[in-house]
Length: 204
Image 1: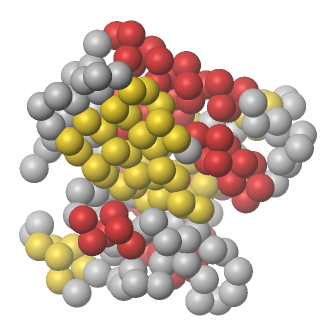
Image 2: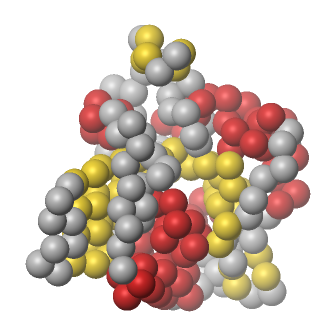
């Protein structure tokens, strides 16, 4: 079932400004490598993005453990998950998205990335890839579809702030399964078992 919110322009602008501010405050010279930059950016993004009497928007990132052959990243194919907790006066939606981060566009052609996307797709239908996109001494991150990369299809590049307002804020993207959301809150993913997704049924 699709859920969607249609927030007024000032709310969308507030969320976009919030994300861009966190990107601008994550100095790529201090976090040069992909894992350190990604962790630094996500730690800044975490929190209540917008809240008033009718609307509550909160982002909860989880960076997965990446050390060892049986690490959470190795098993899931993802570097991190972003959970969005979004409410208005009529409804409440909580969704989580699995994401693999890469430094630049040349990394999208790698066989390793396709293996990682295949692992993510065993856990959730629409995994994403975050490209950090170095531009001089800064980063200009964008998001693209893991499924389209895996299938060799043309994919859109959506700047991270635009992705948050058009896909996360609307809750068009994300997995609503409560057990999945609960499990991706643990960076070690000790309870997240590989599942097969078939005909909208989850087969463990």
